[in-house]
Image 1 (tube, rainbow, N blue to C red):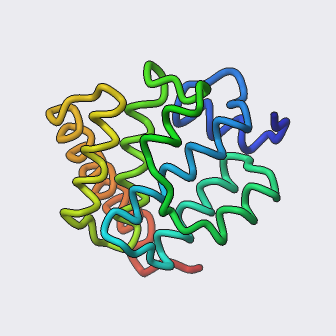
Image 2 (image 1 turned 30 degrees about the horizontal axis):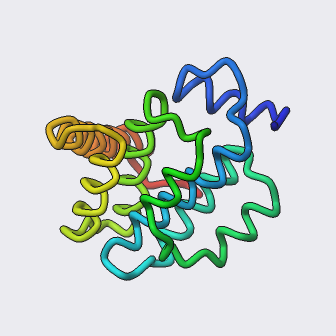
Length: 160
């Protein structure tokens, strides 16, 4: 478990968590994101960069980061989920679906094959297609609002 102030801030700010996420949950959670991003048979550099960056921001260990840098995302999603009791769908299903959509669309493309993999994941986790659609809409809206805010804050262009 991490004691990193930044990781604790991110977890509380974005998820409302007051306790650290167990590291063993993180490893398989991030691997599941790769499996979804690989739904179209390709993990792009942008997708890999997003997932590894997200893992690092979440406080993943150097060993997990190293593993993710090389991870193919070709394992069986069902086997990963069923073998990991720390991925309790009651708590992880919807965030995992949201983060998988973000990872798969990090290259500005959310293909039908990636979406099918998200729907497969959702079904395994007991989340309806209607809820997946709502999460997809939320992701689209948040990305759009984030871009609008960046443009509002930096009307002359980003300095960095």
